[in-house]
Image (cartoon, rainbow, N blue to C red; front, top):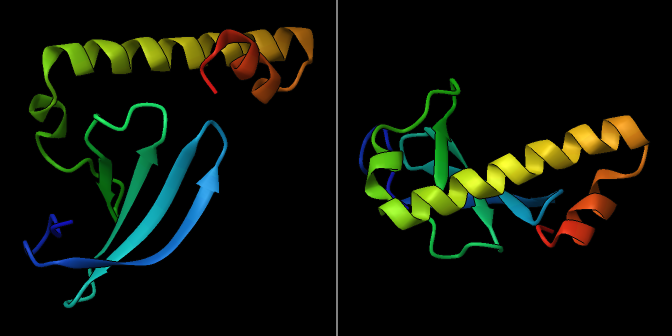
Length: 104
């Protein structure tokens, strides 16, 4: 991946799997800029959602996606939000609802 700050190559400092099938990776370039990316196993065609260290989105990542990829991403996030709301109301674990709805 290319550093959004200096356009240099980055290397993975550490990786961690988080809930919902996402993998969080911390990447570092030679100049020391840290970038965090979240990668989804559910939609490998989607581009990475990268944020700089100060939590700003890297410019234009959304515009780089095709219209069908954007629609799929919107649907995925909408379902996850609805599942979290249902988990809060019913008291069931969120992961169980994700699996039942087929978004885990």
